[in-house]
Image: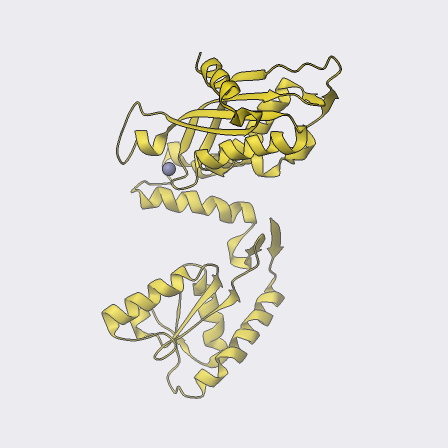
Length: 301
Ligand SMILES: [Zn+2]
């Protein structure tokens, strides 16, 4: 993540650009009522209002200019457009001008505005607001450090993004020309489903038929770790582990079999307490029935 810390002079410049874009609109307006999208848009509203000789208004409905600090996905804009139209019969662009200091930043760019403090502080704001959202008081004793702890645990739970999987394959020559199946069973893993950011966890069983190279068993576990410590779906996790082995080890065949429980199924929604999801990926010789059956039987015990 490329962190871009904006200074006062950058904000001044961005406000100036925003003002220039707004100019055609301003020429048609005698009234200049500015509303800032909470919370980041509020300091922008005050700055812009002073540049254009406008006033900051408390309610969205009273504004003919709406500003935000940053537009990432356009979701906020759509929501505002919706509210304006359904409740006040106004349309963005037509009745109300909408803009932001930064429009759709490139992937991997993280902007920190002067009113946000450091990136760490601003990221801790997110779980804090989620605590408020569920009806908690983030200032009570037990919760004071919880946002910090959540961010820290995310650093760990999603540490897989920082691992270069190709670097895990320190392989050895297959001297003895071992040509039977190598199996590593019951590799425990914990991952997070990308639909709910809830854990899914269970066991991975890996088998491969060596060709020229073999790999240390601990490395297999680390490949699982690298891919599971990300936002995942079980199907992709299975496929990624199998593909990594296929590409970097070039075995005659590889099979990956994962059984897992998904908290998003167990703890919410359908509440199927004991359901286990099973996925497998078979490559090379494992596509042939005999070795496939052998692997499935062995990994199931
Ligand atoms: Zn889920």
